[in-house]
Amino acid sequence: EVQLVESGGGLVKPGGSLRLSCAASGFTFSSYSMNWVRQAPGKGLEWVSSISSSSSYIYYADSVKGRFTISRDNAKNSLYLQMNSLRAEDTAVYYCARDTVAGNSDYWGQGTLVTVSS
Amino acid sequence: DIQMTQSPSSLSASVGDRVTITCRASQSISSYLNWYQQKPGKAPKLLIYAASSLQSGVPSRFSGSGSGTDFTLTISSLQPEDFATYYCQQSYSTLRAFGPGTKVDIK
Image 1 (tube, rainbow over the protein chains, first blue to last red):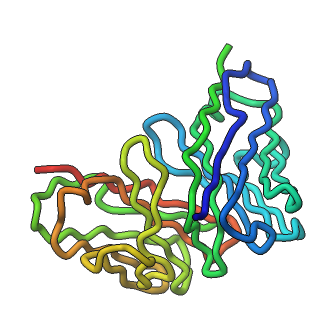
Image 2 (image 1 turned 90 degrees about the vertical axis):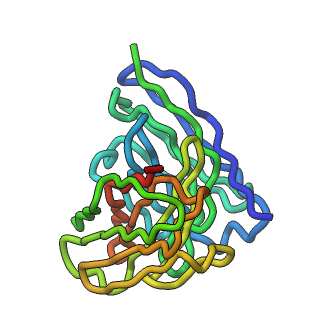
């Protein structure tokens, strides 16, 4: 069974940093691209970042470029999102999601809440 | 960047109704269009990919159509479990924008 479990969310002050993790199991993690998607309270889905299976290709939404860094450790079946210079508008539930060759996200984690507030 | 819009933003419908949601891309995305369903407090669920392909396990009352810039999601006979918010997403560009969502609630 495919499972994606996010962790690392919490309360952080504006300007602070946080590192999210996503533990994957039930599939060959190293064969799939992965995504981070977020959802601010009461708002819609926002794609944040993608990373290819071997980390060769990385993409970011303009809203996080230069502040967030996506990475992965295929030996540990884990995906990460390093978030720096956090702003109030980064407050959201952050989901990791598996990417398919068709370009969709077929499995999602349960999400981890990041709150940026003083 | 490719922008996605959806209409309507919300709709009220009854069990058994036929429901159609529209998604439009700011430029042609061929058939690189996905649809997701999200219920409150839950992660999104993939319904349709490549504009019209039904994801495994998704009921056949869901269907998708369109290509280029205009796409539709149709629920042929709305069921109680279908009350949710629906999002389109383009996968033509590496910047995978979502539409703003369409909330379907009970009339």
